[in-house]
Image (cartoon, rainbow, N blue to C red; front, side, top):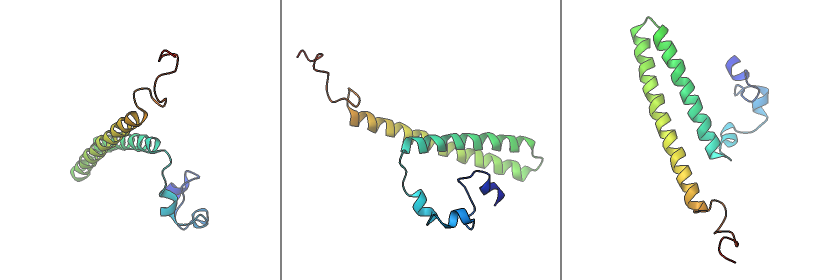
Length: 113
């Protein structure tokens, strides 16, 4: 519970602040900025990988070491997928916007008018 309360926006499910806002799943169902969400996820995965390296290096237990190695591999694979999603999102945006970006066609002065 204490970890969930560190950030004012995150609370345990039975915390009074969380109970008055409706279903938690409904709060998460709409992503307004997909690029920002994926970029944030990539940052979190990178930080998790760094933390796992630290734990793996500092542990004296073989079992924990190998768990960290497996988790690092999973985080790295997930990061690759997120980067792929970001790349495809960029391609879609470029296709949607066309060769002139958000502007449709060349400016009238460039077209000779």
